[in-house]
Structures are given as C-alpha cells and as structure tokens.
Image (cartoon, rainbow, N blue to C red; front, side, top):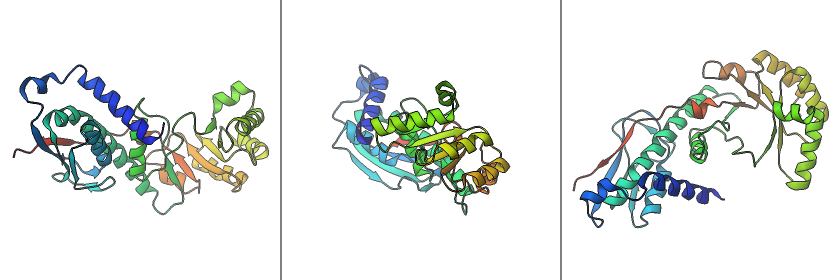
Amino acid sequence: MNYDQQLYHLIDEALKEDVGDGDQSTLSCISPQVKGKAVLKIKQEGILAGVSIARKIFLYKEPGSTFTAFKKDGDEMIPGEKAFEIECTVHTLLQCERLVLNCMQRMSGIATLTHQYVEKLRGYKTKVLDTRKSTPNFRLLEKEAVHIGGGVNHRFGLYDMIMLKDNHIDFCGGIEKAIEKAAQYAANKKPGLKIEIETRNMDDVKRVVAAGKGKVFRIMLDNFTPLQITEALKIINGSFETEASGGINLENIVEFAKTGVDYVSVGALIHQAKSLDLSLKAVII
C-alpha cells in the first residue's frame, strides 16, 4: 500500500473501533443535518504535528467539510493559539474529534521531543534516526511526527531494508556467512535492497570491514561508548555509513556526535514521548 492507502486504512479502522454501530450520544440528541464549527486550541508549548492528518480525517469522513488551517506542521506552538478551524455536520465533527486529538496530541509530543534531540545536534554532522520501537498500527504517523520534528526515518518495517542484528548473525552462523547470504538474497529477490549489520565489539567491526565491502552500506555500533566509536571509525575509515545505537539520550547525545558518527538511533523519540495538550472546542454561532 502507498502512504494514502495506509493512512485511510488507519483512519477507517480507528473510526470503526470508536463508533461501532453508532455514536449513540450524538444520535440521541442532534439531527444529522445540523452543521457545526469547532476550533483546535493549543494548550501547551511544543512543535505542532498532525494538522495535515486532521484535515484528511475530516475530509475522509465528510468530503464537503471546510477545513481552515492557521498553523502548519512543524510550527512552534504557544498556549492560546489556534491551529485550525473545521466546519461540517456536527455528527462528523463529534465522531472525528477524539481520533483527531489522539493523533495530533501524540504526534506533537513526538515532534517536540525529536526537535529537542535535533537541536542538541546542531553544528554536528550526526543525524538522529528513529527505530521500529513504535505503536502497532500507528507507526505511519509516529514516524511522520519524527520527520516533522526534524529527525530522519530509519526503515519503516522488516520489508524495506535488511538489518542483520545479533540474533540473525548468531542463528545464521556468523558475520561473514550472514553478509554473504543476505547479499545473495538481495541480488536475487530485491535488487537495491540495502543491508545494514550490527556489530557488538571491535572484532566484529574488523570482520564486517573485511567481508562487507560492496555488500553492506551501514555498520551499526551497538552499545559502543563514544571512545569505542572513535576507535571503530578509524577502522571503518569512511568505507561505510555508521550508526551508533543503545543508551543514547538527551544528556549524552552530544558526546556521541563529537565522534563524527553519521547517525545515532534513538528509540526514545517515539516510546518516551509525552502527548501534548490540545482541545477541539465548538464555536457557537
């Protein structure tokens, strides 16, 4: 599925989960023909994310809706500001309200935390990557939020990159064997599929450098200290992209960036982010 197909599948399933056989609260007291207007109010500082998603949710449910954006994804937000205004039937407004807020609050939290990491890396060549440590069936929007916050998306799933981690290597029978078999698989099944491999110590790095040229595009340095990364980069000597992973946070990320590693991957961008406070309030005409 392409992006829009994945997004509309997500929206459809989320609305089915919430609405079920009917929004009984709204059905009980509001006529289906009644039109309404609401505004998205910002109640917490941060980086705004999900405006474009909110628009798609409302227009998916009711194509004739009028959506007016006052701010865009990636904008800094201040309490009291308005992000957008929506005008549609009240039934659509109330059925979509919680889905819109859940998406935007979660996405804005991720974008805000990612932005904090990105700011720490200002002036360094190192870029911050997200990971697959995401919420099942919500990864699409979590990774979009990382991008909005200025981070770089790693692979989206198991399908778009070969990543040979410790378990793959051990089950396969070693680094050299895993690289060779992965390279043959990619050549036969999906030419152009990139291969990244995890290393756990300096000996692993040396073995990948010897066996991986022309096959591996990135070496992950897993749970290496900044000093160990500096030594590993001397061995790699620019022949592969490099990624530091494991135990990286806002307090120590600069020490990793100082090594000159190309990327740092941080699962916390998604799984440690806190949702920000937003509300959708009716405008009484």
